[in-house]
Length: 299
Image (cartoon, rainbow, N blue to C red; front, top):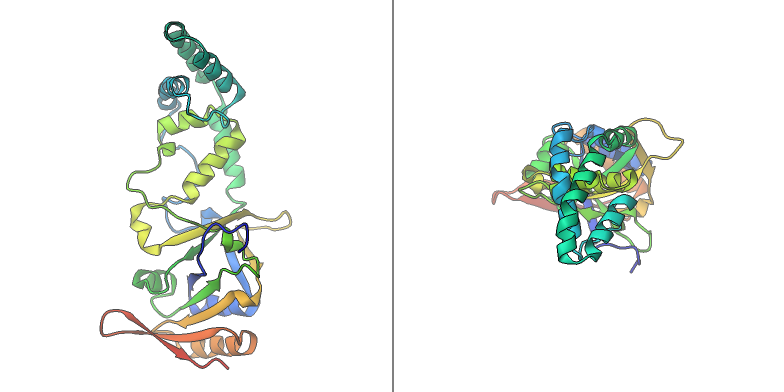
């Protein structure tokens, strides 16, 4: 097994219109997109903390610092050198001295952050990098009616199975599942932003990318989505990147129940000529309210 694997899945699925599937299978590519292209308004945002004021964040700084002083189990390595120094000093004194120091330290720390430009610095850095950020979205299921309707052009599109191959060193061996929490991560709150302002900008941006990339609202749970991320290459332009992959990654092709016969024929010709190893299926609406998969001859 590939040592870089983060999961044991054998395959993922990609839903798409028939016209897109024809391009994907002809060119042997998959599209990675900037989050600015996503249809979910609550997914990775273009702007950060637009609804949180600096005063709200400042009011939380003291509470965050107290937790860092009091809880010696908290790892301080992600925080700025100043915050680490203050925290280590406060942790090292006896309780009486700590209580005397705490008020003064919190007051001074709050003042030092009061005029900080860190919030706007993080926002500006985010604006610069988010167009270059790339996410490949995959699903673990091929039979989600809402996905067939939404992403596969109202059942007239295609689903392609993408293999997770150790031998082919598949990029999606590193894919991670998306979580759909009822309550958003604390990072999106004033307290979370108080913690971010105590970090170097690079650490803060990495934390925000992590939180937004792998958390979506519960409305999207039906997608059973996994993601893998990257950044566009220096020579690329635009908001999407079509990256080539070994044709052996395409292992199954599913034709939607309402696919146009002409689209089906064109795609089947490409699969038969270029992907003889791939299995092909017609998908139908079953009387038991489930999709029916019927394998057809490839070639």
